[in-house]
Length: 478
Ligand code: NAD
Image (cartoon, rainbow, N blue to C red):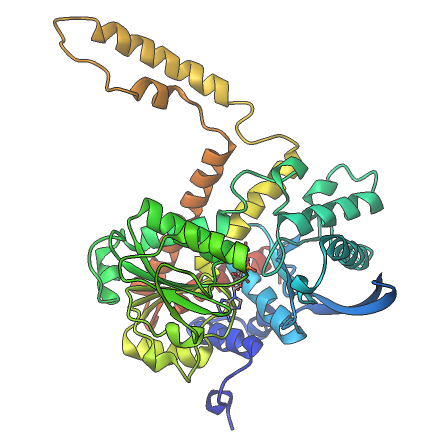
């Protein structure tokens, strides 16, 4: 039986199959294909923490897929589903993602088998600090070698604990803050990191809709305005993507799927209201404005223009792929479409914007945060007022001309205030992220449309990424 005949490949095998589809189109030197594809190392740690009067043992992982550039970068996930296959698949995706969006990192990923909802905040802090200690003493958290970030089940809070724990262990390391990204702004973080992955999903869609021929491949027309969007997972990534697309691009979020079911409304859901309901009630059940569907998985098959799986891997499989009605799928989560489902969807004409591109906003802004930590200065601090004073010169001149009755023109209301303001950190971060998402899409579509035998954006994305990793190995003389 070949891999292709297996009912459903594991997540790790799925990533490898996708890699193989791209590498088969490249003429790689013997041995290099395997060197790039395999995971360098995975560390498993079991540690005990005294909680509620007894020792509880936890299992955690940190996997380093590639060190062609260092540090290796990748999130830390808290979930009961964490296992070696999953962290290795996610670490591999990080290698390709970082290469695709040109962040100078290798790929890594970590995870802890835990249901964070079962623990109090002070207990989670104890567990996180102990996990950090175990990783840091083996340089699996280190500003120069291995830099985690938030992922499913972790947030700014855990990153702040990790950074603090690392600092306690490395009191003379002046770059200690750069040991982890996704920290709160008051603890060495960067403006715009929390929203970054969802914001990147929005920028990716905006860029896709700038190319009518790409939009036509999905059987769609026009812009994001009025498009019906289904979102699975209203966590960090899904919430921000849904919020920005509905508030800023005029998209209609017609269905939201969460762990306990789905809620739909053809008129469009109020994302903020749904989010508040979940925060107060722990799930969608009982949400008053819309129709509730207890079977969330089935809701992925809702008729829509754009489907945004933003919860977890392996939700679109060989079993349900044929029933997915969305014209366009943007993989906000990592690995939501299995390799088997990918083929079925492609044959159906569904366009997929692949995970290694679609959710790269997080690592892109993490890169900005890491640079900020190493440079020890906030972005915009040096140039903001200088920029404003140069703008002031132009405004003064325009005001002088507008007083000239013979010219007969005036400045538009609000122009002066808008133009005068120099960019702050958040604007610079968004600008850098937008530029990154546009450039990476352009690199992918050049391969998609310009090279023979490239069937879709995923294969194109892998080709761009693999070629960049190859260049980096070549530069090292490998
Ligand atoms: P999160 O924990 O903030 O949110 C996940 C959401 O999915 C939660 O609201 C959860 O209730 C929901 N969920 C869980 N099981 C579900 C189910 N069966 N059906 C529907 N919803 C379900 O996690 P996140 O950080 O938003 O990450 C989501 C995905 O995005 C993951 O695949 C992660 O690897 C990927 N990702 C995250 C980042 C980041 O910056 N946080 C960056 C890149 C990729």
